Image (cartoon, rainbow, N blue to C red; front, side, top):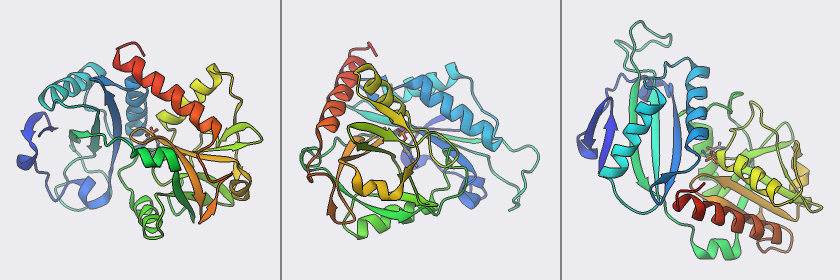
Length: 285
Ligand code: PMP
């Protein structure tokens, strides 16, 4: 397995980063994950726009222009052939001379890009759905930035797993915000609802595509805050992310969502999404 680290293409086992890297000591960095289907990166422009925005928001200089980034991705995809894969991109503020919170002079970002296989969802998951639990959102107030600092997300996901669930739905000030690593959709009275983009949640690329595909198909969609007690009234709950697509949540805190089966609107959205992926594989999306 070959990865890209600071301008070099290296076998994974030979790549290393200093212990004084600000990513290691402070979680001072941002990342991006781009799925690749049939060799075609999925929504590349949108993912790159989000990376550029994350970097700018945390004041890390973007080390490359877009053509340079894309050249790195192409070479890594050639050197790591396979089926469906994802590109993981991480940029930290760089290596310090000594541990100091403030940015020191002359830092140059540490850049890592690596390729991982995408594990397709278990067919049982698409048949039966997943379970989720509701947890308090303990994250910071800039969840719109795709920061590598993921401790609250890690603890929430682990709590979910320990309670036998797949994902945690995070609630802040009485509002359901998103999953620990996914965006949230509800179906209420036949309308698909997702919280509006703001600083409380990550503007998911899959989220935007779901809104786009639903709109094109004439499925009613609405961006609106979701009071946490609405979760129990929803006939369907979905969680979306680049690597896990659209997952139907059929159990919430141990109780059935709707009739406890993946719902009809989820099935339509899932099909639209698979069509979109098939077009991308043929190079047309
Ligand atoms: N919210 C959070 C907190 C996430 O970590 C992710 C996954 N990166 C998402 C939402 C979904 O975003 P995307 O569809 O771009 O993968």
